[in-house]
Image (cartoon, rainbow, N blue to C red; front, side, top):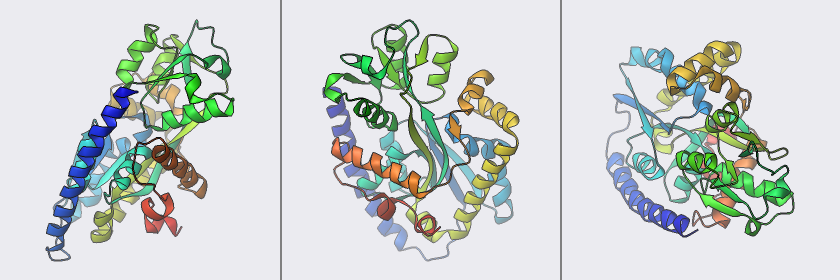
Amino acid sequence: MKKKIIYYSVIVFALLFIVGLYYYYQNRSSQKSEGTKIESVRIGSFSTAVDYAPYLIAKNKGWFEEAFKDKGIKVEYITFQSLPPLNEALATNKVDVLFQAEPPAIVGRAAGIDVKIVDISCSITLGILVNSNSNIETVVDLKKKKIALLAGTGAHYGVLKILERNGISKKDVEIIDMMPPDAKNAFETGKVDAWAVWSPFIDQVELSKKGRVLPNSNFEIQSIMAARGKFISDNKEEFAIIQKVFRKSKEWMLQNPQEAQSIVAKELGLDLEVVQKAWGRHNWSVELSPEIIRDIQNKADFLFNEGFVEKQINVERDLINASVAEQ
């Protein structure tokens, strides 16, 4: 786990620097007069994933641009490939709204960055992959085995909960921290025995017949919509427009699943068959309910207990936007 310790030490130092920038920019922006017209809104995502479908479809159809046309506001899109640049962008007011899983938002909030969860794209049900010809048939068979996953993610939390549910300590397995592309290679070449990952990776492996999902190894992760707290408070009308477009896109997806899948496949550069297989893992009709908030809290506790963050977060108080909490 030396790699994990070094990786997260770098992130901690980076976040401390980012927090300093955050307060600098907050102080500078507070000197501006209220009601200053904004020229653009910046919408981003943490990497690319099938669970960002409502955002990807709205972007593809130009619904964000259409909604802001009469206001003369431009829409900019940003894709972040790692956590430090994402949190730096939040801290320095270079991104306004973000689509991501719940752990990055928790990490940012724990570091003092003013990020809020404002909505949810979907809940995704995943499972632990094993090689198609593996003799691993049950979760118990994972004892003494190597499991690849990205540390500090919902998949990491999910694997530990599945192991615990089956009476297996994390000390009974070897958790190997790997980025998905590296883990894919390690899994396919037999260097690891199992792999916990999200779509489209899990779907590509199943379709290729190189792997199968272990029975009774299911866990959930949440795909959320987050925003800078100050953007919400200072630009209520603009934020409301973005959220309205997002919800319109979710409703359209439920009514037009085939066209939605084609658009997402195009946006992500994936085979349509992969997106079609992934679609059933995603609950697109889910709301940001008390049950979902409790699940996010469990992941916040996991990140604190495992040493990924130094501050324990009360999700409902610290991270959920007030307008959501009131619903």
